[in-house]
Amino acid sequence: MGDLIAVPERGLVYGNRGCLHDAHGEIRRSWAVKRWIACRLQFRDWHRTPLMQPGRYTELFFLDEATAFAAGHRPCALCRRADYDAFTAVWAELHPGEGGADAVDARLHGERVAAGGGRVLHEARADELTDGVFVLRDGAPWVVVGPELVRWTPGGYVDRMPRPVGEPAAVLTPRSLVALLASGWESVVPLLHPSAAGARR
Image (cartoon, rainbow, N blue to C red):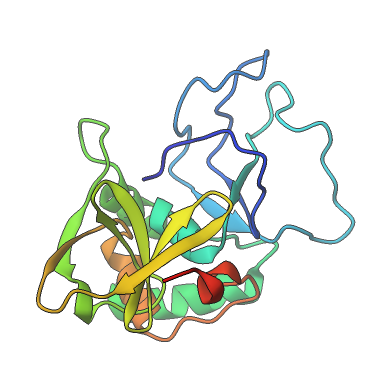
């Protein structure tokens, strides 16, 4: 849903929305900039400790890239340059005339955050969505994996069910990122956490 939650798990993808915490490490806002990015967990020899330093950006962690996409993040242009270049190439086909990170981030921001500050959802048939797209079902986030939906938790995927046929679904993943996933997206960070394959039926 894009909400910030405190859990011990760190996931497979690192993220940034600017400085969201105060000098005491308390979260004060959901985002500070429109540039929401998803990064590698490791890059060069960089290491930040402690986390949530005063005046520095707030370190976020995502279970996998599908989770980061559902929250509305896109690949970082620094630590994931090849992914960013591939992303913007697909973006140019989806949105002719919208070049550069500022245009990408502006559109994504409108697709994830409503004018009143709430979350933007859109509707699609669950059986027509591609792998990695998140839907909301009975108030819980589920991701599309093949012919099934698999339920997300901060530490991994735990349940699975057949995708409903012909049934409308509330889609969490922003529209442009749904289209990107449908293009056959591959990257250096895992699209799905390994638990997606082992979640119980």
